[in-house]
Image 1 (cartoon, rainbow, N blue to C red):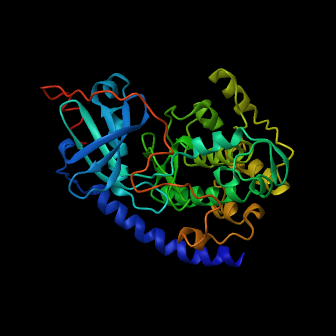
Image 2 (cartoon, helix red, strand yellow):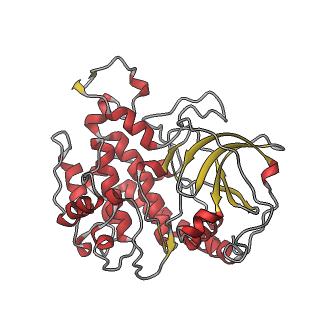
Image 3 (tube, rainbow, N blue to C red):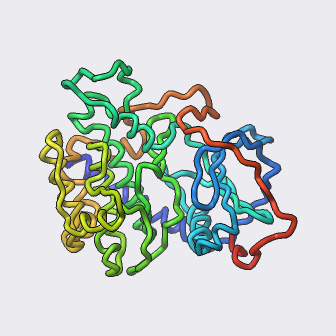
Length: 371
């Protein structure tokens, strides 16, 4: 509890200062003078509905970045203009240790470009899926000969839940920051969590993030991670992020989410029921915090009660963790991905490369005037 008090004494003035700076950046019109010609495109790191993310190197500085290349036409067709412009504005205004940093943004006749810090450890999703294929005979014996350092959930962490706690604390800290700024994230999942070269988390993809002081009604997110109130179209607020945190903690500790099925409608039915089956290896304190987070009744959900995030922070599952030391990155991570250099993309999948086509005439200037 001493660690909690120490952190609470630190966090209130810190967040107050950060909100002032965020609001200043939010009201500014930030211009960028970069262009596509300033970067060498190296390889595709991932693909999505609107385009792709590429590893690029800035020609003058030689620094590596992850460049989101978003097709204007696809964004317009899928009616995602507001989400895309919001993402740029939010990223331009934020500054936090566990959130990916925006380097630059610009546009041309066909595309929008968001240039972010390159986090070379790869997605948590990839590491979790690799580890999920392993089964344990005992605390220190694996079915395969894979060396322990290559596992996302080491044998000892499978039982003591250290790694899940380490990542969860960083997500909680990031959500506390976002919520203090009246931002809802709405897209927590392992695919949107990157692991840096020191083993710490960076949240990425703010396409569904929104600044809301009251409630909102938009149906968005990943089916397995949606809170019941989103599915039921009741209107919702920041509490949906705490539900998603519960889903993530469960998936990190079990290797799969608590609610899954072949069709989204069946997933939604399970979520609304609120019935969760916990694996036998879950500790009693882990089960307890999950019950507090995966609470269908939003008025009883941790993070949404009178004490806010402090109910989560002071839960017994987190006993013994130094929150301030983790915030300051002074705790050695349980897992550190191995990389050969700053531009090493070994932890990302390979994709078929496609030429970047840019129209001769500018498209949708009015729609993206604020980008």
